[in-house]
Length: 270
Image (cartoon, rainbow, N blue to C red; front, side):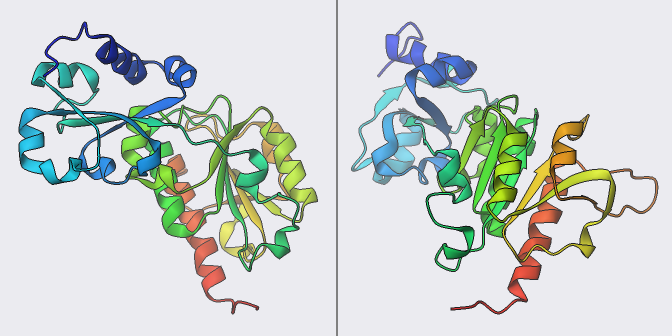
């Protein structure tokens, strides 16, 4: 049993929990908790640490997994949760190119095996919970990829990873240097681009059955002028009462599921 936080491997895990730079350097991220542990693809797992009590209750999960048992106080130091569940894994990062995320891999967007692309473009989001919720909801709504500005919160932040509830392993995503340029490129490739904007028209009036990209901006400031103007159309979610807008995750959810609703009503072509 590892009982000291001075252990070199434990010190590295603590660094990964606290620093995006250290995660990038080692090309890994952390996965905490039993539910997320069960979602990890086997070939991505690098190290796993468990408390003795957790192992005794869940020993069957570790029959084909290498692991180290650590003391309770070491586990507490390795995680950023108040009440750790008792298991932490170091996992290899996923790598997608922007072309893979957006479906621009040599085929036109209309040749993608009957799949109509739906992309979320996230500009400068800062709240880990918002990003994690968007990733999780994206999987449920059939989103095919997520592209983000470099200033968006690190998707491998432990709080983001927990919020995705495993969807981080299944929804393609990437960061790009210039989100405006990518919106322009998607438009040239046949996408319709919509920016979530208070000055837009009702989102109910737009057609999302074709290849679509939704641009959603920072929680406090919304989209930059440049990105808002790059879209084909500005759209807004109608509000009643004194509410001016929804938060980024909720607004994204409404948009994604409206696209899903419209597409579900359109017969698929062979």
